[in-house]
Image: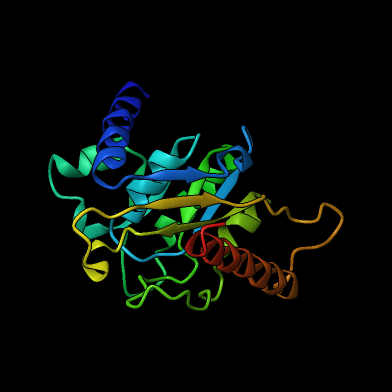
Length: 201
C-alpha cells in the first residue's frame, strides 16, 4: 500500500495543478464492503483520475498490451490487471469477481469502450455481472474534462462525481430482468451526474 499511496499522492498533486481536478460526492463511497465504481469513459486518463479521486484503492481491467516488462509490474502494484480484448477473458473476469468477493473495489466502464463524442452510450450486456456475483454496492460515477485533445483546451478542468450507491435487493433472486433493470437505473444516474456537472450543479 505504501507504493500505491505514494503514487496516488503524486498524481493527486499533478492532476490538481495540470487538470484542475475537482472531486464531488466522495462521501458517497462506502467505507467497506465489495464495491463497483461504474463510470462513463471518454479518455485513457479516466482510470488514474478515478483512482486518485476515490477514497479507497481501486482495481481496474487494462488491456494486456500495456503490461510490458517493468511498467506491467508498476500497473499491477497500482491495482490494474490485464484483460485480453476481442472476447470474454474468463481469467480476467474471475479475477474481477475475486476482488469483489474480498471486499475490495473494482472500477468498470459499462459502455465497454471510450466514447468518441463524450456522449454517454448504452451499457454493454452483462455490465453488472461481476458485481452481481458478490452483491457489491454500485456507485454510479462520472468524469468530465479528461478528453483533453477533443476539448482543445490548454488548461482543462476535470470533474469527478460519485453518486449515491445502488444496492442489490437482499430478498430478491438475481436474474436477467433484475440486472437489466439495475443497469438501466445505473446509466440514468451516470447521465444525471454528467448533466449536473456540465450545467454547474
